[in-house]
Image (spheres, helix red, strand yellow):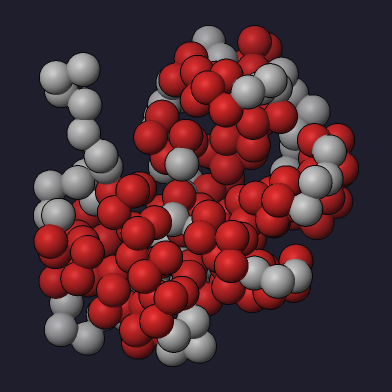
Length: 191
């Protein structure tokens, strides 16, 4: 595909991974990594508030419940040695920008899915954990809401849908196809 390109989701995932390799206890390192990567790739598709945050001299969290916190969180689940650590790292990775409870919840939900999958948990075990812990409705089927689904950058309006895309998939490729078929913020649901 000639017009294919990476997006803000990839750039910020790399920034989180870089932070984790340098010093996961220091949120200033996370901020610096996010600003470094974000400013290196300024046209990756960031939201307006995040673009301002990227260039701020002293960036502060801006109470966002957008799905940016969830899109970049997967490295936290890969380095975590326990589910509690995955949730803690997810919170840290979110709160430098997306410090709204829903922004943190979205990041934690995705991190827990990735961590539990790494531990060999079944999709039904992952689904049960997410529904009970984060109170997301994962009982819907893609075919039942795909036609009405619209572009939604909030965690509440895209994280459950992303998880459903995974739950209904048979393979990695199938999960990506589900995200594309669903529509909306496909790069983030895919991330």
